[in-house]
Image (tube, rainbow, N blue to C red; front, top):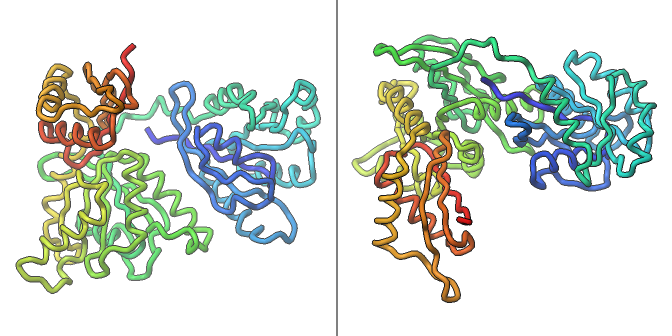
Length: 436
């Protein structure tokens, strides 16, 4: 099931970023009392009552001659177009303004569920004096305070209730994977090579692929896959066109809805700084990852070329040490026959569970070989561990004091787990908890 998307929109300086940060649980958006600070859409995940969703913070929609106003308006309209539910934020301090009315006109045309949030209702009088906002035509307003977290529970109840009903959908048992990378690394050519037919436009012009295109296929041995091709992800400062901004968001959603991500590098061009940021999206999302080095046929090689290039990639992407690497060519189909089986293996590892008894045997042996660290004469004690989640595999380790777990020792424990269980292709998370 795809993750619902919530767009937070409104005129400038009504507190959209404050609400976004409060729900996301982190200061992701810049919060400042200057209209137009949030120029680009900013993405994060939110969770309420066991419902996980994507959130988009947008620049304010307004009229006038302020700098970046046209771009901000375009960004907000694209976010509205992509959203399943829209949270329309207004200000209790200023009441209904002409700009609020204009935003409302845009939202009428969107034909999406709209939840009206009256922000900055910090005191009881403001929370009660909200009747004027009924004139905007979106039903009951929800008085909230983004700064203090007041009323957000009722607001999120309404948001979750408005999510699309997907209970009737047939469960998709295929392995979902997406291709990500900066523009023009050959993602669309790889799609065509894997499918054996030209279903996606292939061009040497960066950014040809504007949308994410889901394609199902079955291999000769009966394995089912759903492949998502995505538009290239560019640096924020170089994302100009409205349609291209839209494609970046579709790429982010494709990562969220994938089991495995194929991170594509261009062997001819080598590694660019933007490659690291693109790979970071998938790593932070906790997806299974395979590194594909495309256009390997175009490289002048010797006996050391593949080894040297792999060492270089590993040095540049140290946080992807768990990801297998495959050198391929969309043009000659070199090694592409190995890809379906590798995707399947990574997907299995991404969803793997291990028995608690075996896991604890491994950890106790690890502690025996390399004793736990001490701090000011106090030694870390590991009592036991258990796996609490998959996709990615997540383990809780109960200890006497989580503060004593040095990051280097945590990395040592992760390496020991990987050495005994095959988690290639997937990140694993270790969480320390105090045993009460």
